[in-house]
Length: 176
Image 1 (tube, rainbow, N blue to C red):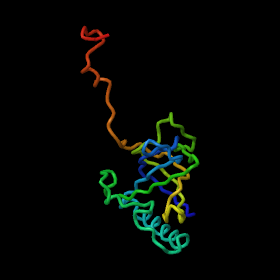
Image 2: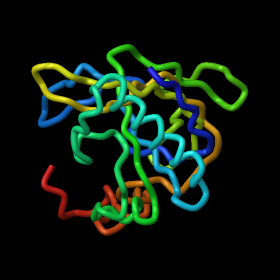
Image 3: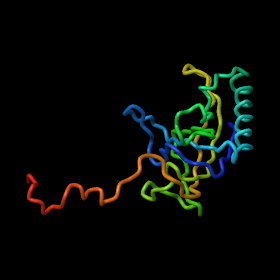
């Protein structure tokens, strides 16, 4: 396995405190996707690409599994706005990863960070898969450290004033 440090990257699709689900089924894995800006993280992207080539050479006996079977994806080939001009790398683990704050104290779900859109440091390990499910280069999720707040991904929240349209409890039209 090739350990890689991902400094100051954006976090997307985090399932850090509970296992993720897909199609309504629990995957049994903790997951996160990390977004690397093509300019700001140019050297890091080259390092990851070189490590992937090494995994292909050593573990997969030089047989490239195809771009769609690599954990590193070119965001410009995605329709997601937040991935344009970036690469993304998805990592997962069956074991809950270490999740810590800037001061290295443990974080819990109740701390409400890290969240999708925040900036984190992460440690991942690349590994080659070659079994009955096929050949791939995957990333294991080892740990995540919250670094800084960022614009949250997803639908914007609402304010309490949005409920003014329903009227108050004193309205006579209330059916109950």
